[in-house]
Image 1 (tube, rainbow, N blue to C red):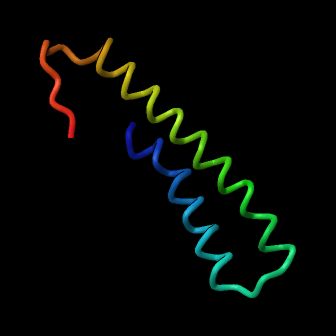
Image 2 (cartoon, helix red, strand yellow):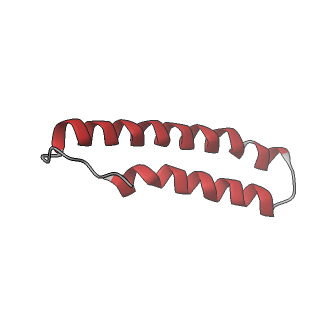
Image 3 (cartoon, rainbow, N blue to C red):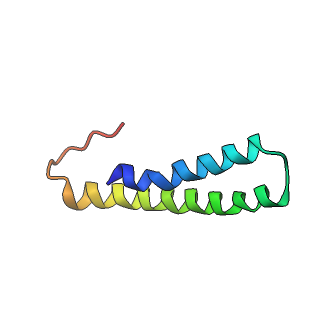
Length: 66
């Protein structure tokens, strides 16, 4: 599940990398807002998943987080 949530962040990183290797144009700049939106939503869902997992699914009373 964790890897699935991280997929939009990988796609956003690829879009940013594409922007930096191509010449600056309106077409490449159109990709940046969608990349930021995807990464932001993925970060929110990831934080929500960690909260739900620790509070509802994890059975131990002690949680060790890196």
